[in-house]
Every structure is written in C-alpha cells, then in structure tokens.
Amino acid sequence: MARETIDPVLAEKLRPKASKIGDQVMHAALKSGLSPEALQRVVEQGGELQKLVTPIIIRLSGETVQTVPVSILGSPRSIDVLGAEGFSAEMYFGSLTGVIIDYISPSFKDQIAGCHGQWINLEAAALRCYQVEKLTETQLIIEAVGDRAFESFLEASARMWQMIKAQGRGQCGNLATIGFRSNIFPYPKGAIFCRWSKSERGWIVTDRLVASPLAWDVYDQVFSR
Image (tube, rainbow, N blue to C red; front, side):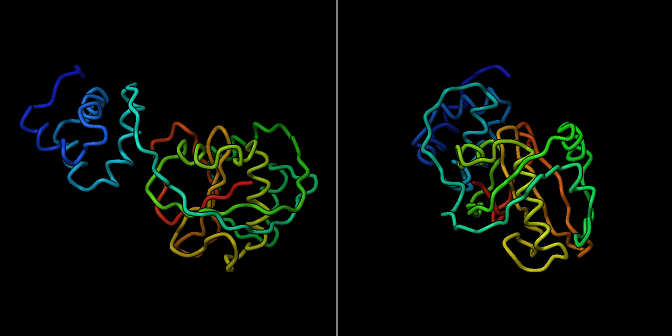
C-alpha cells in the first residue's frame, strides 16, 4: 500500500487519542495495510487496545517507532516442579499411563520427531508462573520472560509433561484446567502449550511458532524458568 497521509480531518480527530505516537503510527498503519477506518476503530476503543496493536502494526510495516512499553504479564508466582531424568519427548508423549490425552497436534508431533531421540535430565526446580493480562502474541511473551524462557522445545516439553503427569485426569493443580485456558511454555522459536478440553475428554497438546498470527488470551498462564 502506498504510504500516504490520512485525511487531515481524520488525523486531527485521532491525534488527541494517539498523542504519544501520533502521525508515525498512522503512517505505519497505512503501510502495513490497515485502513484509516480500521485505525480509527482501534484508537476509539481506548488507549490500552491501541498500545497493544501498535507494536504489531509497526512490525508488519517495517517502521521504527518508539512506543511506551506495555506489561502483558502479571507478577510471577513461584511453583515447585519435579525433575525429569532421561526425558525423551518421543518416549513420554507416546506413553500415556495415568494421563488422559484428547489431542496432540501434528505440528507438535513433527517437533517431537525432529528431536531424533534426544533426551534431557532436569532437576527439580522452582518455575515462575505468570498470568497473561493483555491479548498478545508469542514473540511478545518470549520477550517479556527474556532469558527465563526455556532453552529448547525439549526442555519446555519436559517441564510441561511433568506438570501434565501430576494432573493427568484434569484434577486441580498448577496447570489451569478451568475455562479452557492455555498453559504456555515459551522457548526461543515459539511456545508449546496445553489445555484441558471443554468436553472433559483430556489434555490438548500443541504448539505455536513465533510467526503465528494467533493471539494468547487474557488469563492464560505462562511458565518459565
């Protein structure tokens, strides 16, 4: 889309509500393909939504704009988890004793296959658990937890499996099992996550890479080292 100025009348109407970033955001939105009308709807729904959408618009458009940081995760709480000796994703996710699995996505299975029989030893540890406070995307969650993200798919899946095993039939515990909330385990290339199915048929296990346009919901949980 051509990089053009929004109608001056519309610009004047939006500017008071977008004063921190102003015309730069308008240009970035146009360049990314967001229509002036859509931008107007975003701004008029309130500052919080605008702050959320702006970084995504900027990333799509290639613009460089300084924005006010927005906290997407609440304060973490500490939880103790068991270790995993000789964990292999291929072995553990193929052995479902005591755990009810409703669905494992093909993309998650592909990542398991990509581990080529690798295994990992994890010591018992204290993890951090955060609550998602604003609708957000995977990359922003990875940035929010920083170097506390799990180092690899294998480490993330090992930690997630140990926690699923402790709540194998959907009983209460550190993993959310009410309200179809996601339990997210980020690592540099994306995130894996599990949900207890709405129909009470078991755990749903899947993944989401950084490039995924899908958003995480408010009240989802994020786990990190």
